Image 1 (cartoon, rainbow, N blue to C red):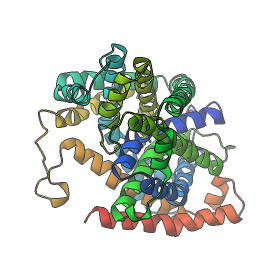
Image 2 (image 1 turned 90 degrees about the vertical axis):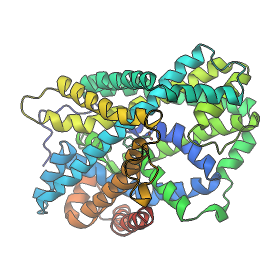
Image 3 (image 1 turned 90 degrees about the horizontal axis):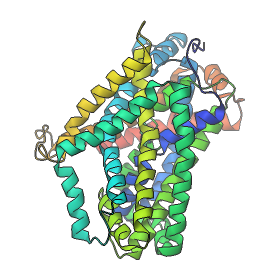
Image 4 (image 1 turned 135 degrees about the vertical axis):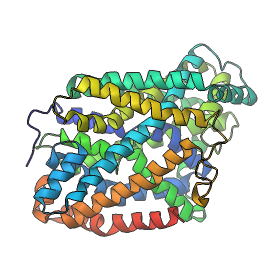
Length: 456
Ligand code: PHE
């Protein structure tokens, strides 16, 4: 059933792992996880997050990779092929399209925020934060956001790099980029954690992340943690499904799924351990929100000895992490376009990247000229949301969980048991049965509840 013939695949299992971990580790871990835990009081979110990764995200990741590899094509064509071979309705192809479109939409705003990290690499190198106070750091960030031209340029630079990598293909482009960047990212992260351990309030940081105050867990925290877990592990959309299509048959999907989820979680926790001890050491606020690493951390970098160096490393880390994710966000659309006869990877990548850049301008303007423009004010759930807020909400809170739920239903209920057993390379033993139970009952129910809460 594998139809990868003529398609380029990963050169090894390790190459796939690097790429998949690279996809998972991104702004979600280093920018979002720390601020989301910070805003919601620390440990409470972390524990729910961990539970969700194990019970919901990993089982769906099994499903997503198995669909990708069995289909062997872009998410849309893989789903169409599987629907056919499993005797299911042809409209399941739409699940593939949902993944492609969700990945594309995430890329449109992801690149804008990744652009901030590029801007900050240059700001920090030039010493813009030396000796700065809270007001000064806030002014620099506000100044960046207020200038749409500047934002659009950084967004273009980041998108351009993404297109360059993806355009070169799986082995020459994606694989090469991740084999350089992922190890570098881990080294930088460990240096930063080491620094935080020596110079920061490490104990306070650890307590903040791990001291679980169960009274802080409510429906809202669960909702946030579930959304964050999906986004962070890159599950529920076409990204890892597409990467799965290039996966050699002899690689164990259960094993790589666990490695991907574990590595992603490890990086999120390490990012927290790099950031919070420094925040506490300088008497700053952990609950700052999205500005935590763009406003709060620069204040600390500005005061600490060697802060210019450490700060530059930090924003470089962020940019690397974002790039290994953005390439996985562009790849699903490119893989689908490449399936059209005579369409070449180079030009379709450039076209898809240009389109994502253009749509991303909606996010760029959401921070300045259109900051007061909330197109869906008529609906209570969407009132006051800018274009950026809407795209982020639609992808993270609707499309990702919806895609995840559909993947769970398709692989758990609609695919023949023999097909999933075969593709997962498992015997009908404990591991398989636990997976099947989780993916049939636990994941869909949790996700249905998330929906019910989300949309009310
Ligand atoms: N997981 C990436 C991050 O943490 C974002 C992402 C989501 C990438 C979905 C691909 C697919 O930043």
